[in-house]
Image 1 (cartoon, one colour):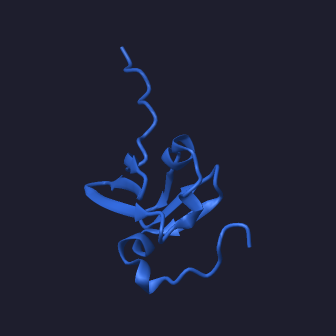
Image 2: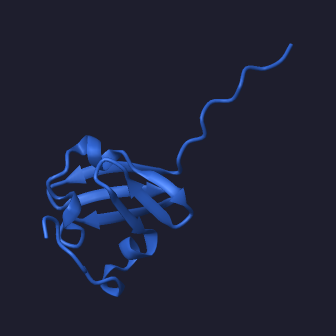
Length: 89
């Protein structure tokens, strides 16, 4: 007897908490905080929009409903990646 097909592979990234100041991502075994002050694209997003995040590669995240993609390193050290544009500009 053949086993059933395996389910879809999990993405390796999950939003674990949202606060008025930002949200936490669990990326494999690393927890990262994404502050709204550094990443204003998420400030007015719904929890559903924030929670729908995809791991496109080992170091690249994408929020399809918000059309936001970020290098993981920019979350780890936002000072190395100055804000170039602001929402609505």
